Length: 349
Ligand code: NAD
Ligand code: UD1
Image (tube, rainbow, N blue to C red; front, top):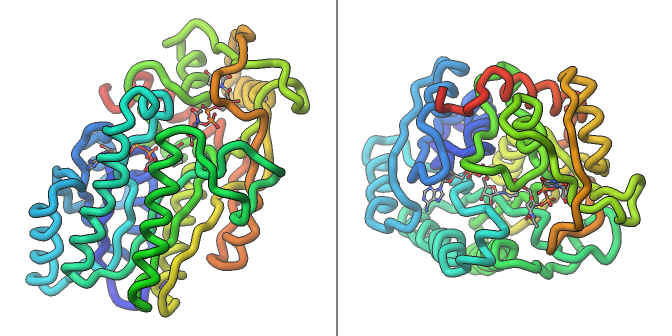
């Protein structure tokens, strides 16, 4: 439970896929989130839908995490109004692996320099708590499965490097003042949508990731799925991942904040996954059965940079945060399909 009534939080990137779902859980847990988003990949419609689902009017600032003056104003004004920001949930960033290879400076600028600017503003305002969106991608090539948090950090692309660098920055930031608390949540593969069918993932252009591609085939926006590789040493030759319902992930942030607020300080990095691996064909077949839609597919060569399989050891999350994923693959497919079928063009309808 929150320690004070409606503690104020700054939620960067709250208009995005994971941020918008997390806002719902934060509001329901009694927090007062202030959203800061530059809308480069987020949607104002998503925030409106969060408002109608929660009955809570959101405070939204359109702006960039790299804008130091804006951040100082936001921290200062909330303090002046008697409801100072007590913690930051930091989703804002760029997240496409291929794009990070093509434009690494953009990724270092937004993800690393942007986080440094944010931390400097937090220091100015003496805000000591941050929950950061990290990724299982920090582990790189798996030495063994499942990934525990002790696995070496060895990212294989600039996007992953930015996440690993920010984790290191947060580790060092915490070490300089005992009151500082940073929890890096290493997400596995978030999919699915809010069960209302009102919130979901709305990728711009051709989806890079598997699940939104499947749902777009199902709704008739794309002719077929290309499956990248059927010769991996896995259960059926296709890649295996740990898919996690976006709402389970959202709950993980509430648990992380509760944990951070209940400790004296320090750094932690925690896997958020289900602990279960699912192949591309298994996901496809489950989705087909749930949606009643046939998903045509073609096998293609492996996608460069892909690993055969990965899944989480989520035991740290359970031990430290009291968090465990509860939603099944069927839930992920049913909720994702409800969202896609009711919103074939995402938030643009
Ligand atoms: P998203 O793109 O939907 O959300 C990111 C939000 O940040 C968007 O609303 C975007 O407009 C905003 N943003 C981007 N740059 C900004 C800036 N400079 N200033 C202010 N706002 C900015 O992505 P998501 O899937 O919700 O991911 C959220 C976070 O989780 C990201 O940091 C991402 O790297 C991380 N993550 C995502 C996944 C995934 O599969 N979706 C997996 C692991 C980690
Ligand atoms: C990708 C990112 C990773 C990010 C993660 C979560 C890469 C190299 N890695 O990982 O950094 O944290 O998303 O969002 O991009 N697949 C197909 N056809 C498709 C798309 C994917 O067969 O059209 C396969 C892939 O080969 C893989 C599986 O589906 O085996 C999952 O792919 P994807 O959803 O892109 O996630 P990751 O590869 O795990």
